[in-house]
Length: 512
Image (tube, rainbow, N blue to C red; front, side, top):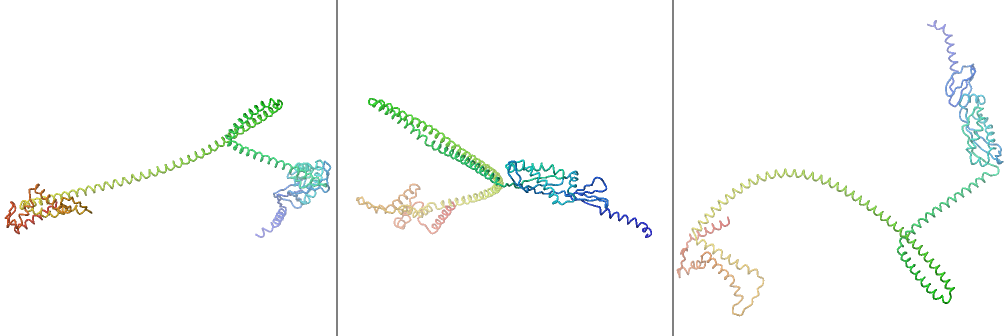
C-alpha cells in the first residue's frame, strides 16, 4: 500500500499547493464597496456584494467605497450676489459613487482605495466653486425666499462636473445664509412687520366679523323687542298721527288768525309747521315700519316656539304611544299566557270536579238511601206514637184533656201577665167615679184568664170551671155534684193512668 502511495505523493502535494493558492485568492465584496480585479484581462472585473476568485500573483485587487458621503459646502470668503451683496452660504450635499459600471470605472480612476473622508475632501472644492457661481446669479432675496430653487440650481450645476468624476449628487440642502451688513435681518424685520400688519388686518377683520355678528344678534333682539311692542307702537302711531292732524289744524287756524296782522310771518310759520308735520309724518311712518318689523319678528318667534312645542308634544305622544303599544303587547302576551294557564287549570279543575261530582253523586245516593230509611223508620215510629196517643186519648178521654188544660193554666197566666212586666212606668189617673185605676190593673190577669177559659168552653165545649168545681170536696160531699163523663171517685189507679197518658202525650209531642 505504501509502495503505491509514494509514487503519487508529489502529485498530491502539487494539488494541495494549487488548492491553497486558489483558496488564498477567494474574495467576497460587501454591498457598500466595489472589488475591482484586474491583471489578466483588458477589462477589469467588478464585484459588488458578491464573491469571486483572484488569481494570486497574476491579478490585482483594488477597493472602491460605494456608500453615501456627506460634503460640507461652505464659502470661505464672502461671495457677492447678483445685487452686489456679500453673503456667506453654508450647505450640505449628499453624494455617492455612480452605481453603473461606467460610473465605477470613472470613480476608480480618481478615488480608488481612498477613504470616504478623502473622497469628500477632493469633492469639496469643486462643489464650493459651483455654489459660488450660482450665488453670483441670484439676488439676496431669491436666495433666502426660495432656497429649494437655489439648492436645485447648485445640484444641476455641480452634477455636470460630478458626472465626469463618476459621482452622483443625491441631495443638496442650504443650511444657513448670512451677510456682512445685516440686510437679511432687516428683511426679516420688514417681513415681521408685514406679518404683524397682516395679523393686525386679520384681527381687525375678525373683530369686524364679531361686530357684524353682534350687530346681527342685536338686530334680532331688537326685532324681537319691536315685535313685542307692535300693538303699543301702532296705537301710539295712530295717536301721533291724530295729534299731528289736530296740531296741523290748530296751526292752520292760528296762521289764518294771524294772517291779518303779519302775512309774511304767517307764511314762514306755515312753512315751518309744514316741515314739522312732514317730519312727524316721516317719523310716524318709520315707527310704523319698525312696528311692522317687530310684529313680523314676534310672529316668527311665536311660530318657531309653537312648532318646537308641537314637535316636542308630537315626540312625547309618539313615545307614549310606543310605550303604550309595548305595554299592551306585553299585557296581551301575559294575558294570553294567563289564559292558557287558566284553561289548563280549568281543565284540571273540570276533571277534578267531574271526579268530585261522581263521588258526590255516590255520596248523595248513599245519603238518600240512608235518609229514606230514616224517614221510613221515623214515619213508622210517628205512626206508632200517634196510634198510642190516640188509644190513650180514647181511653181516658175528658180526664186526660182536663189534666192537660189544668197543667197549662199557670203558663197561660204567665203569658197574660208577661206584657205587664215590660212596662217601665205607669201613670194612673183616677176618673172620680169610685173605680180605682190600681184595682183595674190588678183585675187585668184574672179577667183575661177568665175570658180565655170562656173561649175554650165555646170552642171545645169543655167547661173548665165546672170540672174544677165538681172535683172539690164541697161539691162531692155537701152538694153531691157530678159531671157526666167525669167519674165520681178518682182512685189512685185512675190518677196514675192519667199521668201515664199525659207522659205519652208529652213524649209524642216531643217526637213530633
